[in-house]
Length: 133
Image (cartoon, rainbow, N blue to C red; front, side, top):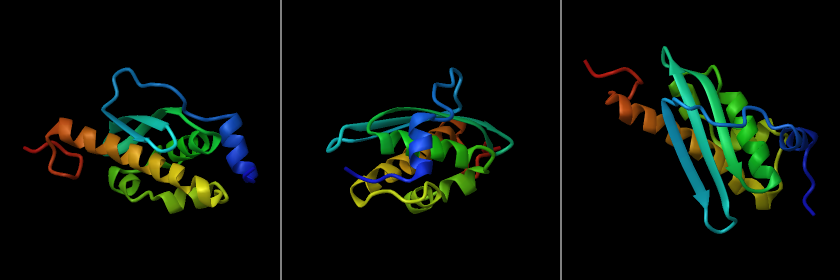
């Protein structure tokens, strides 16, 4: 059985920011057909910053912990900062993940990035989160 850090266990047992944002500015969904994990991230953007980040995850404990951590790390970040979040930085913030669970941290960052891309696409933006004039 994999050994998880205290931070992973805390974020699995008490995940933060679970749920949907009804009028989300962007929604990103990713999945891993091999392990069956599915993550959906919902974002609310104000002044080019992530004002609110929520998620719904179907998956293992590591996937839930990663989703919780990504949502906490990203809230308050600018879109550019959030797009720079990586699976490595998420795993590091969690105090590490077992090698066979590292793909979960990739899904979390990917789902967040997909939500930001969805937002930018909806806004018809020029890539920096602002509407093209």
